[in-house]
Image 1: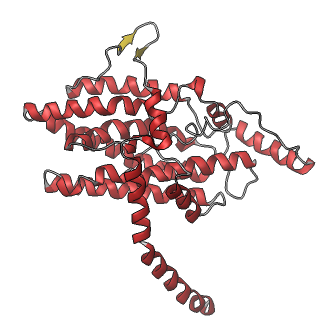
Image 2: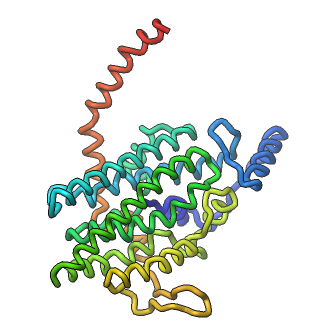
Length: 338
């Protein structure tokens, strides 16, 4: 899945000047070496020196990406017990399990930057940390599961594949496996929709209704327009981002239009058309007021999603305590044997 990590924080203190502390001679040399490696498209590893702003940006982005993975399990997990067949249930179970695994990869990557998993989860549960706004909407029908696979995961892939070349090594390496699995998720979602579109008129209508409800939300997933996204330029300078929000959004639209045509659904945008001069599709205006309302905690399912995560964490306390006790019991024995 995907998080608008670097851009949903942009409105906090927007336009306010930031004080920059003077670097010592030693830190100036380290900064120069860091800049040289970034300019050479090299990788920064956990033990390398890095600017504090770079570290904080990565902690925020990677942790919010991880939060999005585990919160993203909830909308589809809602349909596991109601899947229309054993085959679809098994596929959905595997997918939701994959999302949980993605969260683990990403929390581990964030921990290499000096933060703790406990702190990251506390930030999520307190509402301090954000996650992708797309998961604050309900999944009303079985077709929503397919549309999430096709469109939501499709948007995630468009954003995440470039992160495989991120300048921070642990994040880039984690994304290689994540992207492989997300690609399967998108194909699975699209295949499920193809089956429905070959069914009854009611099933085809159900798919179209789901597309109508999710299309604009998926376009907003890429974050605010470049003009309203001041963090993007620095993220690209550091090699954390490779494309701007608008560039990624355009790539997604261009890739999705022919897929929709093959599927037999209509994308709900009367302004959507091919622009020969630009070599891209034009599309209508996104409702950014809804986007920011959901990001700020006022979406249809914000409270429900957060409450579910807090309950799951609390219910799992005994497992964490048992694991810690087991580790404490065996560590001294293993150390003595060594």
